[in-house]
Amino acid sequence: MFQLEKKCLKDATTYTDYLKLSQYRHNVNASNETLHIEDHGAGSKVFKTNDRKVKDILRHNCSTQKDAQMFYRICNYLKVNTVLELGTSLGIATHAMAIARPDAIITTVEGSPEVYEYAASTLLSNGIKNVNCISSTFKEFFEKYDFNNITYDLIYIDGHHDGAATLHYFEAILDKVHNDSVVIFDDIYWSTDMTAAWNKICSHSKVTASVDCFDVGMVFFRKEQLPERFHVKL
View 1 (cartoon, rainbow, N blue to C red):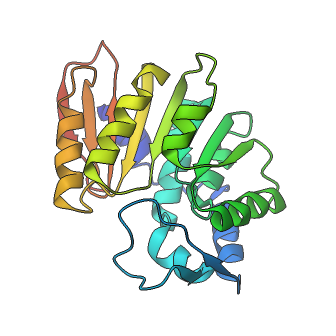
View 2: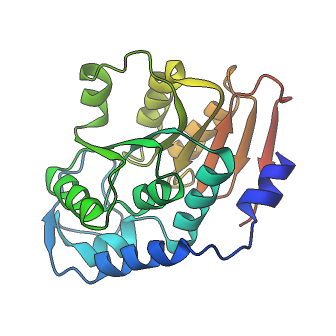
Protein backbone atom coordinates (compact mmCIF):
# COMPACT_ATOMS: atom_id res chain seq x y z
CA MET A 1 0.00 0.00 0.00
CA PHE A 2 2.90 2.34 0.68
CA GLN A 3 4.27 1.58 -2.77
CA LEU A 4 0.86 2.42 -4.24
CA GLU A 5 0.94 5.76 -2.46
CA LYS A 6 4.50 6.59 -3.44
CA LYS A 7 4.67 5.24 -7.00
CA CYS A 8 1.11 5.87 -8.12
CA LEU A 9 -1.13 8.14 -6.07
CA LYS A 10 1.61 10.68 -5.36
CA ASP A 11 3.59 10.14 -8.55
CA ALA A 12 4.48 13.67 -9.71
CA THR A 13 5.65 12.61 -13.19
CA THR A 14 4.14 14.70 -15.99
CA TYR A 15 3.21 11.97 -18.46
CA THR A 16 2.97 12.95 -22.12
CA ASP A 17 -0.49 11.34 -22.23
CA TYR A 18 -1.69 14.04 -19.85
CA LEU A 19 -1.84 16.27 -22.94
CA LYS A 20 -4.48 13.94 -24.41
CA LEU A 21 -6.45 14.17 -21.18
CA SER A 22 -6.28 17.97 -21.33
CA GLN A 23 -7.31 18.01 -25.00
CA TYR A 24 -10.34 15.82 -24.34
CA ARG A 25 -11.40 18.11 -21.52
CA HIS A 26 -10.88 21.15 -23.75
CA ASN A 27 -13.03 19.58 -26.49
CA VAL A 28 -15.85 18.88 -24.03
CA ASN A 29 -15.63 22.38 -22.55
CA ALA A 30 -15.89 23.88 -26.05
CA SER A 31 -19.27 22.22 -26.63
CA ASN A 32 -22.33 24.45 -26.84
CA GLU A 33 -24.73 21.53 -26.49
CA THR A 34 -27.44 21.29 -23.85
CA LEU A 35 -28.37 17.83 -22.59
CA HIS A 36 -31.51 16.66 -20.85
CA ILE A 37 -30.58 14.74 -17.72
CA GLU A 38 -32.57 11.75 -16.48
CA ASP A 39 -31.33 11.61 -12.91
CA HIS A 40 -31.74 8.18 -11.32
CA GLY A 41 -29.79 9.07 -8.19
CA ALA A 42 -29.71 11.58 -5.37
CA GLY A 43 -30.09 14.59 -7.64
CA SER A 44 -27.89 17.66 -7.95
CA LYS A 45 -26.79 20.10 -5.27
CA VAL A 46 -26.09 22.71 -7.97
CA PHE A 47 -28.61 22.48 -10.82
CA LYS A 48 -32.27 23.47 -10.52
CA THR A 49 -33.25 22.07 -13.93
CA ASN A 50 -32.58 18.84 -15.80
CA ASP A 51 -31.62 20.68 -18.99
CA ARG A 52 -27.92 21.46 -18.56
CA LYS A 53 -25.14 22.79 -20.74
CA VAL A 54 -22.31 20.35 -21.36
CA LYS A 55 -19.71 22.79 -20.05
CA ASP A 56 -21.70 23.19 -16.82
CA ILE A 57 -21.93 19.42 -16.38
CA LEU A 58 -18.18 19.27 -16.90
CA ARG A 59 -17.58 21.95 -14.27
CA HIS A 60 -19.83 20.53 -11.57
CA ASN A 61 -20.33 16.80 -12.17
CA CYS A 62 -17.22 15.36 -13.82
CA SER A 63 -13.81 14.23 -12.66
CA THR A 64 -11.36 17.09 -12.31
CA GLN A 65 -8.18 17.13 -14.38
CA LYS A 66 -6.31 16.05 -11.24
CA ASP A 67 -8.67 13.11 -10.74
CA ALA A 68 -8.44 12.11 -14.41
CA GLN A 69 -4.66 12.00 -14.06
CA MET A 70 -5.06 9.86 -10.94
CA PHE A 71 -7.23 7.35 -12.81
CA TYR A 72 -4.64 7.27 -15.58
CA ARG A 73 -1.89 6.47 -13.05
CA ILE A 74 -3.93 3.84 -11.22
CA CYS A 75 -4.76 1.96 -14.41
CA ASN A 76 -1.11 2.09 -15.48
CA TYR A 77 0.29 1.10 -12.11
CA LEU A 78 -2.10 -1.82 -11.59
CA LYS A 79 -1.89 -2.84 -15.27
CA VAL A 80 -5.65 -3.30 -15.45
CA ASN A 81 -7.10 -5.23 -18.39
CA THR A 82 -10.82 -5.20 -17.53
CA VAL A 83 -12.66 -2.16 -16.18
CA LEU A 84 -16.28 -1.53 -15.22
CA GLU A 85 -17.42 2.06 -14.71
CA LEU A 86 -20.85 2.81 -13.28
CA GLY A 87 -21.59 6.40 -14.27
CA THR A 88 -19.99 7.56 -17.52
CA SER A 89 -21.15 11.17 -17.40
CA LEU A 90 -19.19 12.98 -20.15
CA GLY A 91 -16.45 10.35 -20.24
CA ILE A 92 -13.64 12.26 -18.52
CA ALA A 93 -12.50 9.37 -16.30
CA THR A 94 -13.44 6.86 -19.01
CA HIS A 95 -11.14 8.58 -21.47
CA ALA A 96 -8.26 8.70 -18.96
CA MET A 97 -8.53 4.98 -18.25
CA ALA A 98 -8.77 4.13 -21.95
CA ILE A 99 -5.69 6.22 -22.75
CA ALA A 100 -3.74 4.58 -19.93
CA ARG A 101 -4.56 1.04 -21.06
CA PRO A 102 -5.42 1.06 -24.79
CA ASP A 103 -5.60 -2.75 -24.90
CA ALA A 104 -7.91 -3.00 -21.89
CA ILE A 105 -11.61 -3.75 -22.24
CA ILE A 106 -13.57 -0.94 -20.58
CA THR A 107 -17.31 -1.19 -20.00
CA THR A 108 -19.04 1.99 -18.90
CA VAL A 109 -22.71 2.38 -17.94
CA GLU A 110 -24.71 5.61 -18.13
CA GLY A 111 -28.36 5.91 -17.11
CA SER A 112 -29.19 9.22 -18.80
CA PRO A 113 -29.75 8.57 -22.56
CA GLU A 114 -28.66 11.98 -23.89
CA VAL A 115 -25.53 11.94 -21.71
CA TYR A 116 -24.80 8.41 -22.92
CA GLU A 117 -25.13 9.50 -26.56
CA TYR A 118 -22.86 12.48 -26.00
CA ALA A 119 -20.17 10.50 -24.18
CA ALA A 120 -20.20 7.59 -26.63
CA SER A 121 -19.85 9.85 -29.68
CA THR A 122 -17.25 12.12 -28.05
CA LEU A 123 -15.06 9.21 -26.95
CA LEU A 124 -15.22 7.74 -30.46
CA SER A 125 -14.45 11.08 -32.13
CA ASN A 126 -11.39 11.36 -29.89
CA GLY A 127 -10.05 8.03 -31.14
CA ILE A 128 -11.14 5.85 -28.21
CA LYS A 129 -12.05 2.39 -29.49
CA ASN A 130 -11.63 0.15 -26.42
CA VAL A 131 -14.70 1.39 -24.53
CA ASN A 132 -18.07 -0.34 -24.60
CA CYS A 133 -20.69 2.28 -23.69
CA ILE A 134 -23.99 0.95 -22.35
CA SER A 135 -27.17 2.99 -21.92
CA SER A 136 -28.82 1.59 -18.81
CA THR A 137 -29.59 2.28 -15.19
CA PHE A 138 -27.24 0.46 -12.84
CA LYS A 139 -30.11 -1.68 -11.54
CA GLU A 140 -31.10 -2.78 -15.05
CA PHE A 141 -27.47 -3.41 -15.95
CA PHE A 142 -27.01 -5.90 -13.11
CA GLU A 143 -30.38 -7.53 -13.78
CA LYS A 144 -30.21 -7.88 -17.57
CA TYR A 145 -26.59 -8.13 -18.71
CA ASP A 146 -24.85 -11.50 -18.94
CA PHE A 147 -21.42 -11.19 -17.38
CA ASN A 148 -20.35 -14.73 -18.38
CA ASN A 149 -18.48 -15.08 -15.09
CA ILE A 150 -16.28 -12.09 -15.98
CA THR A 151 -14.27 -10.41 -13.24
CA TYR A 152 -12.89 -6.89 -13.32
CA ASP A 153 -9.47 -5.57 -12.36
CA LEU A 154 -10.97 -2.17 -11.58
CA ILE A 155 -14.54 -1.09 -10.86
CA TYR A 156 -15.37 2.60 -10.55
CA ILE A 157 -18.72 3.51 -8.97
CA ASP A 158 -19.62 7.13 -9.69
CA GLY A 159 -23.32 7.74 -9.63
CA HIS A 160 -26.53 7.71 -7.58
CA HIS A 161 -24.75 9.22 -4.53
CA ASP A 162 -27.08 7.45 -2.14
CA GLY A 163 -25.74 5.41 0.74
CA ALA A 164 -28.18 2.51 0.50
CA ALA A 165 -27.78 2.31 -3.29
CA THR A 166 -23.98 2.42 -3.00
CA LEU A 167 -24.06 -0.50 -0.55
CA HIS A 168 -26.37 -2.38 -2.93
CA TYR A 169 -24.04 -1.86 -5.90
CA PHE A 170 -21.06 -2.91 -3.80
CA GLU A 171 -22.80 -6.17 -2.90
CA ALA A 172 -23.72 -6.65 -6.56
CA ILE A 173 -20.11 -6.44 -7.75
CA LEU A 174 -18.55 -8.68 -5.09
CA ASP A 175 -18.73 -11.76 -7.30
CA LYS A 176 -17.11 -9.77 -10.12
CA VAL A 177 -13.85 -9.00 -8.30
CA HIS A 178 -10.75 -11.11 -7.74
CA ASN A 179 -7.89 -11.05 -5.27
CA ASP A 180 -6.10 -8.14 -6.97
CA SER A 181 -9.13 -6.03 -7.93
CA VAL A 182 -9.69 -2.47 -6.76
CA VAL A 183 -13.10 -0.84 -6.37
CA ILE A 184 -13.15 2.95 -6.41
CA PHE A 185 -16.01 5.07 -5.05
CA ASP A 186 -16.51 8.74 -5.85
CA ASP A 187 -17.96 11.34 -3.47
CA ILE A 188 -17.64 9.29 -0.29
CA TYR A 189 -18.27 12.49 1.71
CA TRP A 190 -21.19 13.66 -0.46
CA SER A 191 -23.60 13.17 2.45
CA THR A 192 -23.75 11.56 5.86
CA ASP A 193 -25.33 8.41 4.44
CA MET A 194 -22.64 8.16 1.73
CA THR A 195 -19.96 8.40 4.43
CA ALA A 196 -21.79 5.79 6.51
CA ALA A 197 -21.92 3.52 3.45
CA TRP A 198 -18.20 4.03 2.87
CA ASN A 199 -17.43 3.06 6.47
CA LYS A 200 -19.57 -0.08 6.17
CA ILE A 201 -17.80 -1.04 2.96
CA CYS A 202 -14.39 -0.57 4.58
CA SER A 203 -15.38 -2.93 7.40
CA HIS A 204 -16.82 -5.59 5.05
CA SER A 205 -15.41 -9.08 5.63
CA LYS A 206 -14.07 -9.33 2.06
CA VAL A 207 -12.30 -5.97 2.15
CA THR A 208 -8.75 -5.92 3.44
CA ALA A 209 -7.22 -2.50 2.74
CA SER A 210 -8.99 0.77 2.05
CA VAL A 211 -7.58 4.11 0.93
CA ASP A 212 -9.42 7.33 1.72
CA CYS A 213 -8.37 10.21 -0.56
CA PHE A 214 -11.21 12.35 0.81
CA ASP A 215 -13.38 12.71 -2.31
CA VAL A 216 -12.43 9.29 -3.63
CA GLY A 217 -12.20 6.01 -1.73
CA MET A 218 -10.61 2.73 -2.82
CA VAL A 219 -10.98 -0.78 -1.43
CA PHE A 220 -8.81 -3.84 -2.03
CA PHE A 221 -9.36 -7.55 -1.49
CA ARG A 222 -5.84 -8.99 -1.35
CA LYS A 223 -5.76 -11.82 1.16
CA GLU A 224 -2.03 -11.16 1.63
CA GLN A 225 -2.83 -7.70 3.00
CA LEU A 226 -3.55 -7.24 6.67
CA PRO A 227 -6.80 -5.32 7.23
CA GLU A 228 -5.98 -1.63 7.49
CA ARG A 229 -7.46 1.75 6.61
CA PHE A 230 -5.20 4.32 4.99
CA HIS A 231 -5.70 8.07 4.46
CA VAL A 232 -3.83 9.71 1.60
CA LYS A 233 -3.96 13.45 0.98
CA LEU A 234 -3.47 14.12 -2.73
